[in-house]
Image (cartoon, rainbow, N blue to C red; front, side, top):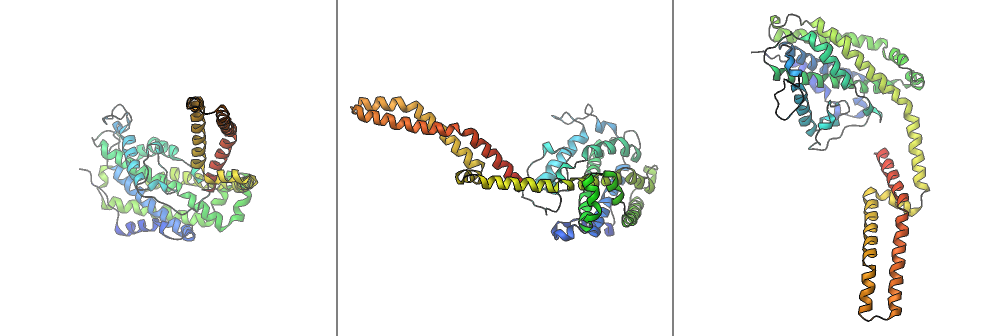
Amino acid sequence: QTARCSISSPLMSMEAVSNSWSISDKALLSIELINNSVNSQDATIVQNIVERSHLCLNPDTYSSKASKVQGFSGSLVVYIMQEMEKSHAKAGRYKCPAEIPFFPETLLEPLIPTEYPSVLHMRYTSINLNKEIWEVYFGKMLPKLVKHGKDGHNGPSAVCDAKILQGLSKRIHYSMFLAEAKFRKSPDIYESAIKEQDPEKLRKLLKDPEDGDEFKRQKQFRTDVCQVLMNSGASMSSNPKLKPEMVVELFDEFVIPMAMEVQIQYLLFKAHDDNVASAHARETLQLKALSKRKQWLVKAGPPVAWTAKIVGVLVTCIVLVLRHKVLDMLMKKGVVSQETVIAALTMFLLTKEILEALKKGKEYMELIRFYVKFWERDK
């Protein structure tokens, strides 16, 4: 039976540091706190890597043909990942900016509303390296971590893979917070490269001497964590190819470059700040330029606007259908012709007024679309 490694208590205490959402926004963008959280995430990833290394590759885990999940056409690892993400989504995991699902189309709504501090640039949701993470892990990292062959543990292999992928995704996308913290600390340093949209210049700026020292400390930390886990877990004979140096090399070769790419992409979005602000100002002026009645329609919201339009259409249809029947009924009851004419004229004018309003439906629809855009931007 495969032994399961457990992380030592000093390392477990680091996990509490990563729970930084309970503190202020200013502390959330503390570079020291971010680096502590990165160390905690690295420790968790290394722990899962060591656990996965005790199992063989088990290629059937990644074959849709070999999958025995009833009613599911994909591979076992895809099924496990989707089910994990569904359950985690219920707890609000993916409301966190650094948590990005691999299969967002299968997620369920959180059972409890969850909110996180809004400290990142509004376009951070455009950054998603999960596809690259998936390909790099299964194509380049996993073959170096495990022995080839089968041991029958397809399920545990899929679970370990899913945990590693989730950890890598959070670790890499968490770099958005580091980029925001660096920018707020010294915005003048990055301003020129951002305006020029020069990724290579940003790459050089992000690799400052202080980061170099921190990188060395993090590298040594990962080495120590891996050594502790290996010594406290199963013997190395279960997988002699796994060594602390090799795990650290995988981080240096794949994880760190992708984390740097996230920082660069994030800072490049800063160039759009002025454009976004100008667009928002233009929309505000457009709203103020509308007549009071149209302003009310916009501010009332799409539900009210749609309700008014639907009621208008229904009333028009009813009037058109019943107009002749009402006139016939009035004549049968002996209503004088003059009154009949007055009634008919009244209904005609009412119908005409409604039809005129319906002709402006296109204008109202434009207002509704404008409101939705305005409301989403404000949100």
